Amino acid sequence: MLASSAPYLAVIDADLQHDETLVPKLLEAAKRGDADIVAASRYMVGGSTGALPAERVRLSRAAGALSRVLCKGVTDPMSGFFVVRRAFLERVVRRLYGRGFKILLDLVAAARGQVRIV
Image (cartoon, rainbow, N blue to C red; front, side, top):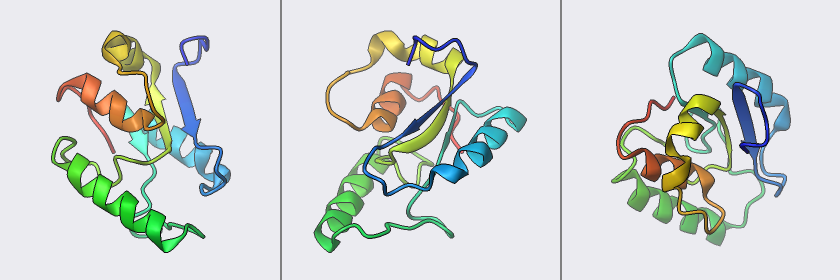
């Protein structure tokens, strides 16, 4: 992610569950606000879990419920679809766990409460 010089970075899982045409909307929201991260959520109005198997949806909801305790205000901390401000990433990169695939959760944890998410 740091190889890019862009002021904002888009992250999207490669499992085809996210609508990539929404990237411009996430980027627009990031540019007009003061958020460090703009995250798409499967659990808000207009969000969708798509064709995910029921078991995966249940596991995602359970993991999300647990992680929301640590990530106040984040409706889908397990989301794999978000835009992050590069300046924020540079601030927390040294504290990232760096293992696994839940990058948003890792970013929020590394921020230690100093993150603005919409």
